[in-house]
Length: 79
Length: 130
Image (cartoon, rainbow over all chains, first blue to last red; front, top):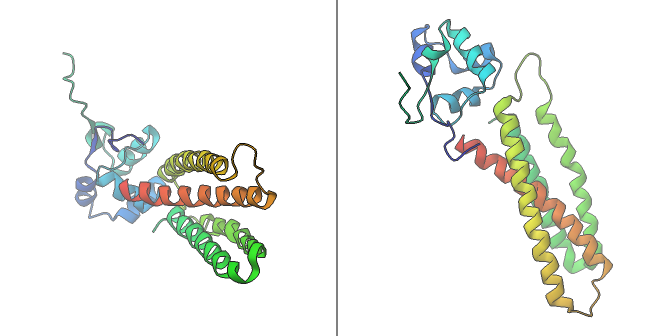
C-alpha cells in the first residue's frame, strides 16, 4: 500500500452501479468475490484493485475495463 | 466491520484484559501474577472470525494486503521495543550486572503482546485509511 492508496487509478464503479438498476455494493461484492468493504474502498478511491479483480468488476458491469478504470499518473500518452 | 477488523479488536481486547489482570494481581501475588499471562492462550480463538460461512466472502485481496502490511509494521515495532528494552537493561543493571531470569521471560511475553497489539492497531488503521 503506497502513500497514494489508489496509485492514480480512478474508477466509475459507483456510476456504473446506479446505471445498472441501482445495484447495491453488497451485490457487486458478491458477484466479483470480494467484501463490501473493498467495494466501498474502491469507490472512495482509497484502494487500487489487482488486475484480475479489475477485470471481474468490468465483466460484472458488461463493459470494457477501460470504461471502468482509468489511470492518470500526470504523464501525457505518447501519440 | 470486516472479519479482520473483528479479529483485530478481539486481539486488542484479550491483550487489554491480560495486562489489567496482571497489573491488578501484582500487589497480591507478586511475580506469580505472571500466571495471568496464560489468558493470552485465548488469542487463537480470533480465527473464528475468519471461518467460512456458506458462500460468503470472509476475506479478500485487500484484507490480505492489509494483513501483510500490518504484520510488517508489527514486527518493526517489536524490533524497536526489544532494542529499547535491551538498552534499558544495560542502564538498569550496568556493565557488570545480571538480568534476572524472570525479567527475561517477562520481556519475551511483553514482546509477544506488543507484536499482536501493534499488528492489530495497524490493521484497524490501514482498514480505515483504505
